[in-house]
Image 1 (spheres, rainbow, N blue to C red):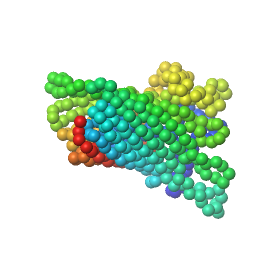
Image 2: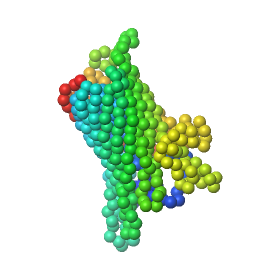
Image 3: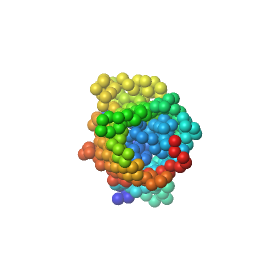
Image 4: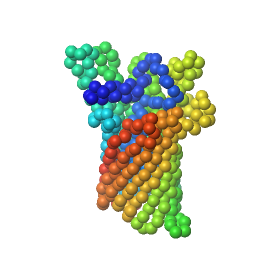
Length: 383
């Protein structure tokens, strides 16, 4: 079983560090990037809502989804800690950890920071059966800071800067195993409508948008082979059904698209490789071309858009129940799953849990069988 687990880890690492190889053939036009851990929902609340958060109510974990929401958060400051087991049906030492901090400086502005760490576990490698094994601990992490500002009573914007480090290359006696580094910038906006009456209940509209991880390509070696980081566009909307002072239901929808080139066989040699033009585009050229470069035209571009639907019920802002569904085209990764979640808030403490069920028989999510857990502390006076 241990050998099988190590083999699975090796396959995972091979996919994640594909930028190191000089002759890689891509079998289909599924978009892949370096440092994909940046797109994994690392907090349990978003995990229970079908991995969405660009237009939902602000919380301590808004940094990953839409930092503009911090300008509308109620508490003066807060801390969030989350833990996500990964590939639990195969191994027990791969996980993602994250810590967030936010502070509303004034009534109209806030800053926040977070640290996210993806641990690939421990691997023992040897070149020969009698060699002493070399213990390897591949990992990736990011550190980011954001500043959010209210432009009006209903609209805010934020800018985020992020440092990325990916230490995945396996060390051997005759190979350079230096870590890869890059940086990214996020630009986001958030809209919180006024509370209005809709007959038997009150309601409020919310909307959000975030372009994340805009930055240079990342390189794992000195040969000049580079990979795109996961520049991503999120658009979403939500509506709060405020049934009474104790009961609120929020429904939300979110759409997401990677702003990196679609792999294509530009030299018509029968294979899609890194020698084709799509791989040689610059970071910004790749962003702008990503809206119309799919070989299959508009129909394929639409398939590159993932979507999710979710509902969240709060009782007296103390208990929450969540339901979500995430969908991706079968030609572009085939991730389809249902999520369930719950939350409990007492005084300054909030605990959130979520669980995922894959609904596509052909593809099972790496988060299948994992219970995501988040703990947050909301401190200071409320605005």
